[in-house]
Length: 225
Image (tube, rainbow, N blue to C red; front, side, top):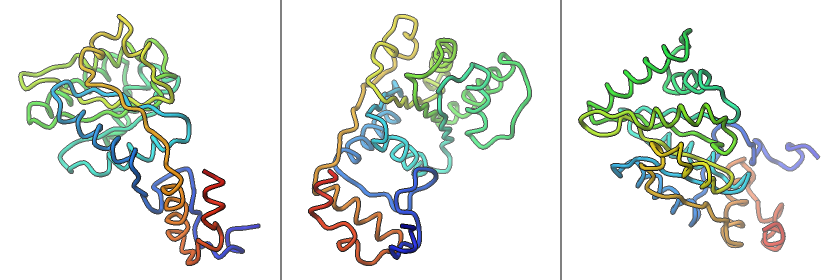
């Protein structure tokens, strides 16, 4: 059965790109507050974790889009990134064109950028997903970035995202420059049954389906939950 046969004009549950509608629920609001706390705290580093497909990427993407225009935000997937790749994707994530150069040169450019913005009291934000899948060399580089300072404080804010608690990683002795700045960790909890109904029906309405209760009755939504 294709989407059009159901009367859906758009895919309601697509997994890539901006969602048709962003549905709020309790744990998502609590997680959003935690992300706000990270950027307000002098430490400026926090860990958000939850199982696969629990909405972490959607949440942090929405949060990034909500930042003021004067706050630079880069969001990268740390999975199996080599150090030079991590630097390049971080730089590109801030909206800059690709720069050819060695790891040392890229680090120097990013350091200048971070410190310049921090001196204006606008330290950039770096969101790193899947830190539990990062190579040790990339994690070590992340610690170097976390240690950057100016007279105004730390030059970079870091939001770490993982599919598991990753405490053994972030609190390892070699990760001290990053761990010393941690304000805490937050586990993204699930939707309640009632929230699931609202979530599913909201997604269907966003896809221009006018009768979501007929396609997914409340009892079916509860069964899916």
